Amino acid sequence: MTTVVATGTFEILHPGHMLFLKEAKKLGDKLFVIISTDRNATREKGRILIPQEQRLEMVKALKFVDNAVIGDEKDMFRPIVKIKPDIIALGRDQRFRENELEAELKKRGIDARVVRIKKFLNGGLNSSSRIVERIKGK
Image (tube, rainbow, N blue to C red; front, top):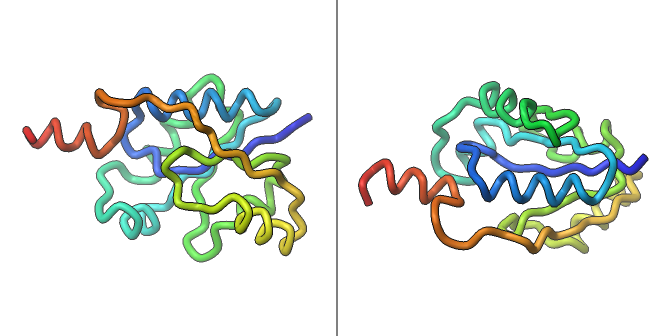
C-alpha cells in the first residue's frame, strides 16, 4: 500500500487543484491531503478568504482524497511524521526544493520520495488568485 501526501491551501477549489490532486492520487493507493492553517496561509498568500475548517471539509469531500487534515502552525513536518507517507507530491508552483525536502524528511526518520507534479492547466480560472481578481473586476 503506497501512501501519498499532497499539501496546499486549497482556498477556492478550482480545476487546477483537481488536476493536482488527481495526479497525486495516481502515484499511490491512498491520498492524504494536508491543508494549510489560516495563519500559515495568510503568511504565504497575504490573505485568507475561506477558513481552514471549511477548506478541510471541501477537500475531504473529493472522492479521490482518502483523508485530509489541517497542518501544524509551528512544524509543517508534524502531520507528515504521523502519516508516514511513501511519496510527497508537490504542485508545480510550490516553493519547496525536492532534494532539501527529502533531506529534512530523512532527518525525521521518513524515507519518502518527493515528486513534483508537472501537469497543470494554463490560463482560465485555474488559480485562486485569478478567481479573486475576476470577482474584483480586474
